[in-house]
Image (cartoon, rainbow, N blue to C red; front, side, top):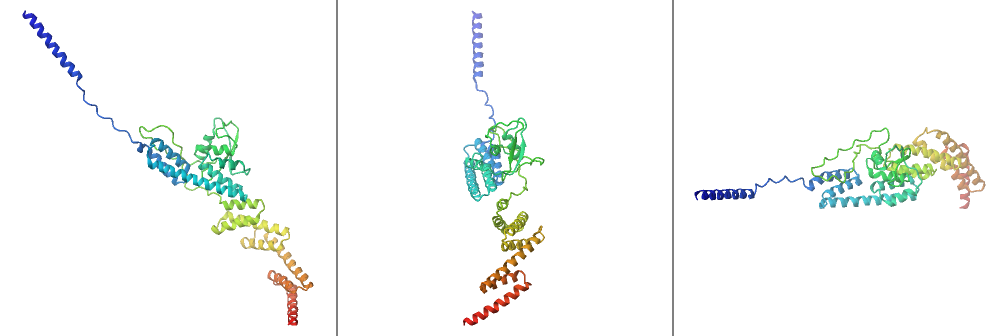
Length: 385
């Protein structure tokens, strides 16, 4: 009897122990410490916004817009970035419109090289602009470009990165060579790499500018889309050819010397020491004076060559041409005076001989005839009274 009681007490104790163990297992464990919060979206987007600001300050608007778009991919709800991107897009659109307008105006003037540069500038800002593409296709005029022989594995975007530091400009290379934007290149092809205004062209044999280091990705930052490679712009770039100088050269090439002089005088008014403009003006004055002499336009030739003598007294054989023109012009004035005198047109004859003496004050016959004509005219006037 007593044994059964002990057995029962042992069972009750075991049951109590099991319940206590179960309660312990069900008791909540201590809460784990919270994980540290990752960087905010604004923090992740900040390097791209900073880059966009720097690019915009450098005038590289297309690349700046791409950096803004990356920032918006990371933090799409940031109102400041949205506003900056919208303002930048409007700025690009306005500049593209200006370039297209100036390109059309240059085309109408016949300044095709200048027009092409404006259209290329528009494409650098907006590589998908169809108006600029079509305008360029309609122009047969050659442009400043370097040649590149394609090697195996090269692509248009890769060439754009190599020569411009911006893969988006691969479409400009395609357009220049009448290729589709996604055309496959084959080894041995020879392509023209155009000199795009406002974009540094890395020419063969010239070390390209070192790329700017990319901002290190923050922990947890999205891996796509990749940031556009940014190539540092050299502090000192060779200046673009002045549009007036380009137009003057075009006019001179087609022997439109008066238009060339008009463009050069306009340029020299604002830049009187422009060496290229001064050199070209001497060439134009010489060619125009010689042309006028050949056409027996002695008055025009004398004025042109006299202007050249003041600018460059010993330019080629301009001195000899000036003497020839002077002699023929003196003869022209003198003979015209004789003709008017015989026709009894004394005032006209006097004017011609005075013109002779302005060029050659020592011309004896002109002086003698002038004195005689003036005395005769005076006598006639007195008789009329």
